[in-house]
Length: 197
Ligand SMILES: [Zn+2]
Picture 1 (tube, rainbow, N blue to C red):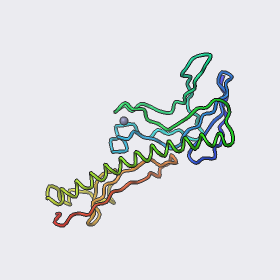
Picture 2 (cartoon, rainbow, N blue to C red):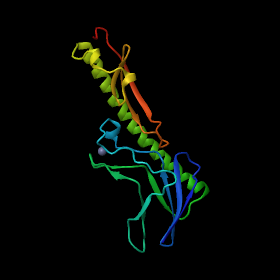
Picture 3 (cartoon, rainbow, N blue to C red):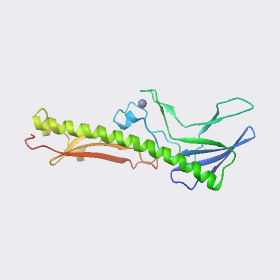
Picture 4 (cartoon, rainbow, N blue to C red):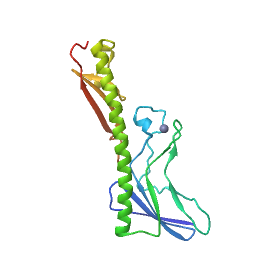
């Protein structure tokens, strides 16, 4: 027997619900920011893409212990078919029906964990794009690559390395934190060294 009411948390990009499972009141609080496998962020599209838990969709709750001491876990992650790691948004479960400051505190914790994870992925993406841009600039300088082998940045539908004037631009993206189509583009720009073809 389960009853569920979605409740506002007051913290951006989080959602929460009061549930009653087997007569136990619990609160689940989750991040609504889509989370992909880090390898997907780095361009491997065969890795797990963004996993999204919308604000109006309560995560599946699983009892990870036994009667008479249930321990509730929210299942928001899926296993990446490529690297095997678990990928998905943060979610925390608390006993009782949290309200007010108690609810806001846990929602802030969820938002911070989600921000840290996204920041870590952004750092890895920037490091990867920096390598790509610098490698390409080096190859243009030593002649192992010519300009006409690279696309104009404005014509690229997918992430990669392109040119714009005298600049090499490596770009990728993180999924729209709101779950829509407004992805966060990340770019690293390097000048084409003098002597580049
Ligand atoms: Zn993976």
